[in-house]
Amino acid sequence: MIPFLDLKEINQQYHQELKDACSRVIDSGWYIMGNELKAFEQEFSEYCDSKYCIGVANGLDALILTLRAWKELGKLNDGDEVIVPSNTYIASILAISENNLTPVLVEPDINTFNLTADGIKSAITGKTKVILPVHLYGQISPMKEIMNLAKKHDLLVLEDCAQSHGAMIDGKKAGTWGDAGAFSFYPGKNLGALGDAGAVTTDDEELLEVLSALLNYGSHEKYKNKYKGVNSRLDEIQAAMLRVKLKHLDRETKARQAVAKQYLDGIKNPLIELPEVSNVEGHVWHLFVIKNKYRETLQKYLSDNGVQTLIHYPIPPHKQGAYEEWSDMDFPVSEELHKEVLSLPIQPNANISNTAYVICLLNEFMV
Ligand SMILES: *Cc1c(COP(=O)(O)O)cnc(C)c1O
Image (cartoon, rainbow, N blue to C red; front, side):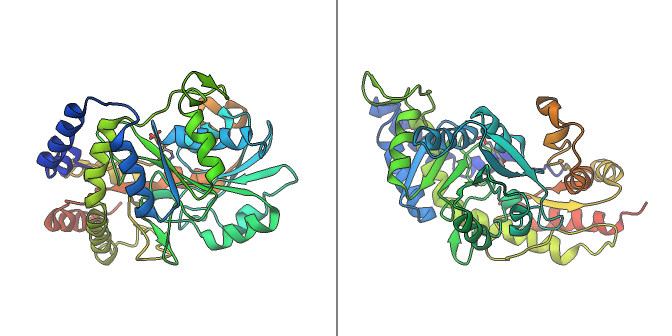
């Protein structure tokens, strides 16, 4: 079986380094808010080229707490509108509703899967306060156009970078275009911890200050609580694991790009629609997503021939039980995507002949 993603194999390559880092934490006697976190925050902000990075417990919290911090700073109020893609992973939307803000779903470009400036523009109202672009599958959204629009309408921009570590456009990385970037280090992400973890990147010191309190019970100073905060800390063990993985991220990204190129060059079946790449160097290929009208048949055919694929995502957010109130709304682009997308195996240590085999199967696929 060619697995979709073999995390065990990926992490085993770094077994000794990870073990050493783990021992370092065990022997330090300090397990929360210590030197590993500080070092990781420094290293990740250098990697992204943001002024600051602050660790949190997971990617959803990175989104939730950033919006929450803007509320605490008086920049947002209950009911304000946040523009978000209609085809995103539900976490981007949960973060908005969790803050009593109003998600405004906007259709993506059907070929790049991302928001466009035109799509966003047509959804801006007097209540719009935030644009939340999601750099889906590893490809960054058209940030120059989005930032121009944000400037013109005085909107905040929160980038969902959970799938786009190191992705860039015009030489500038995801998480440094907007007012803040929210990252997830869930194990299967391009930069994955060995458990849950997340972070926010920003150049805004004021935002950093509020976030640092919110994630720690709302406290800047022990036993003094300015906000009704939460506990959302990135622990020392995960920070230490991430420091090891970060050193290998660029090499892993290059390997993902090589697999993607092999697919793009090799797949020649008119039944299969390849993903549109708007900028080749900047795409970090968290997922390689094709479109096919006969997706279920194709998925079964690949599985029968020993290739595991996944669907990101099978149900659009507006058809989820959690958002019953949207069930009558129409998002035809998103609905079509959710019917047709299929994610092929892609991982940094994929082997060329396995990928060639998948390509061969795809080229022989008929209905
Ligand atoms: C994974 C993901 C999240 C949530 O990250 P967690 O660390 O799992 O909470 C948010 N947005 C997108 C687009 C994601 O892919």
